[in-house]
Length: 525
Image (cartoon, rainbow, N blue to C red; front, side, top):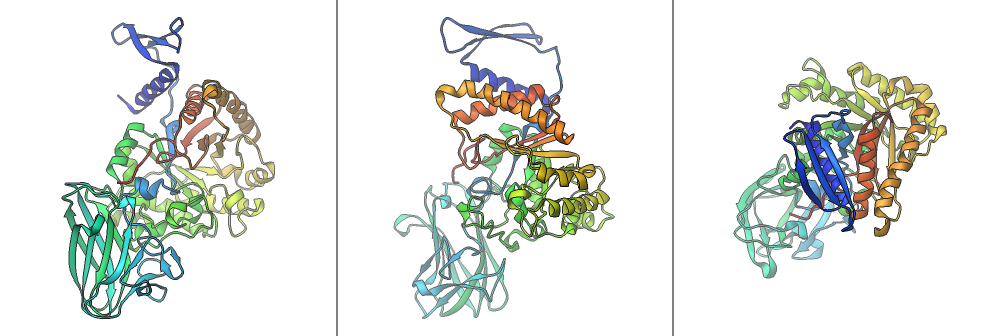
């Protein structure tokens, strides 16, 4: 079954499920299927006839896209398989690393900004006397382990002298689950690594790193991953994503895109500087306003290939030179004769990633920094970015950061953009978070209303801008778990996209978002 037909099958299932229990009344071979649906009453039914041989308009898989935005728990304790919080010691309070506690004495552990491995600082541990273990400890739900499952550990350490370092995972009452001793040599940063299979299942375990030799040592990065991780991502979550069959993925956001440094993602994962702080309380509250940059461009592309999904990328505009955007496009789409295409090939990906859709910033009108939330400044920068990108690959589709939220058209923002860069933009961006209170009694009516209210909004947008639409963020709200009410609303919008998306000039749509915020619920490992 091809990709388009798979998605049509999913839509049929969604809307049949909305009507009530299903029973198959009869069918003719490979042609007509009659389905009688009990619509909640014993004395009434709805009869649906599907003729499998009669073909209608083609529904684009790009209408079934998802945002893969690095926010809240979408990646951390979501898609990412990394189990150690604040693993590069970026988040700190009172000169101590958050999410960690001292072993031995509170004053034994400090943040040291004069010695750094990834980012701007490290954790400094001082062992005051020989014989007593001092170090650092972390205990949390995501450190649960399962019997028979393999786990990989990495610790980057720097020491003043030769010392023994002990790493262990413990359960309640100090029960040892894993234990490994290493010998550290003095000098530069060194990697200590190990892999072990758990003999027990234990929730809320603790990771501990200590030493008994007097002196000072530093920890730069600590990692604990399931042994079967896919490019640092959870295979169980990927399996759930495969069930959704997203037509496309948009990365890395969203508001987060305006903080994302794509070149850092080319470094080995432990060396990538953490991203943050963002200063936006809603972005990364579950990881202390930092992301440890587990997913870079190559990991993202590997995920898209695994899911058979088209990649789409949001370029950073705020406080980022135009050359950064152009070089990212060249890294993804350039051939091996180009500077960045050669770098990609040397990293193992000889063929172009062929990314077609590129967003020129995200919600810059609200969250642009360095003056980018000024309409004139953004219009000028958008033109410069678009011209630089089109020189690299004139076949890409650029999406302008138009202010078209909830169907409102902000001419004060959009007119300067269209005047300066409109000829270079293939699409206009529309964001839509309905955020209405959904009462169970109104769910079916609300699904119809969601469709009815969105249609004229799309018609107004196209009439105003004369640009096809990319519906790149949509849901009832962001930041919350999925619900029955959300499901009915989503079904209504999907109905609109499938039936009238082409007539409304909607080329692509990206649901917000697949992991932990609507589509699937992810629990700690």
